[in-house]
Length: 427
Image (cartoon, rainbow, N blue to C red; front, side, top):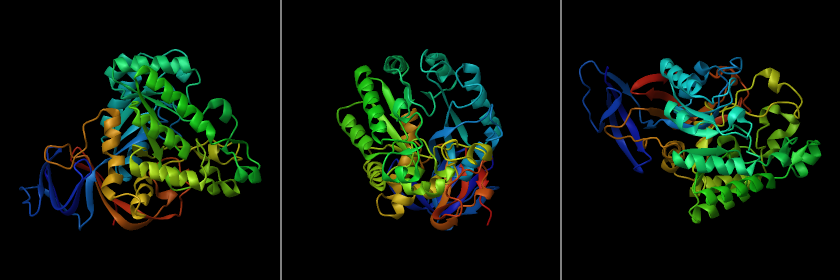
């Protein structure tokens, strides 16, 4: 493999909490050397970073797959292309496909297909229950052997507490993690907004924010009871942040994430019934948004994800109550995620840790490093460069982003997977 030398970069290693200036030499898919004034081997490609940041590639904990079954919304090819354009080198994919990813063959297909595409690495989440019906558990051991890194039933909570208890106990046998969704299904069944003055003025069916806390508290109790590993997300309310903080202090094996949209927007964004702002959970109050940012900053919220949910125009160009929830987010994860760093709420290294180190730990992956011997899954970005989001230019097949036209800061310049440049931004 041809060597690559990146010169004049800010070398950021969130795991080691270090930042230095210098060069990075990559050979045979791994980092061969870092430091100032490195010499390029004969035949090596040389890329001048011009002071941009070089860091481990982002690991997105939460994306929703559409391939197979709904390729008109997103194919695996367009999803991995969108990922690398956003600096994401690996992503967890929830089992929202048709057929559902619930057997070893489906898991293996995703792994092999993503390898063949040679872009971002796909980390399959297999269904926790057969057909995601919340009744009979799937074969965790066989699915894990095939490549599943977690178990989830998609963007819906497990209604039956006994089933979740059994899942947590069963997963413990394999040291596997169970992903759950933080909304009580009975309270939120017909809701599309957060209960309160704003939803009332708009005349939208709404659910109380307490529906999140209710589900989180139940799932935390079951996790404490079983000693299993639970991951909850996306977390969107201050009350849920407080409950998880208290559970962690007691030693409960829980982790959680929030999505970039929830640290950027509040419920006011649904004005004019903009279906591109319809999410699940729904957007919350400004007080909740601030509490979620605080939870991300202090580490209660372990990771930041995109919650990438492709929906085409037929699913979105409807009334607010009828439209499907969700937005695409792979290509906006970095500029939106940098918000707390630009606001002085978090250091850049801590923010990057929520996008790299923490997701890897949750999924049991090797610690992402910018160090000799580490796999060269890297992102080169300018955290301060202005960027205006353009939906039509996005690689994702669906264009359902509420951030079209938004001016942000943070531009991905190049993405490397296994030492290969798989994305380079046009000048």
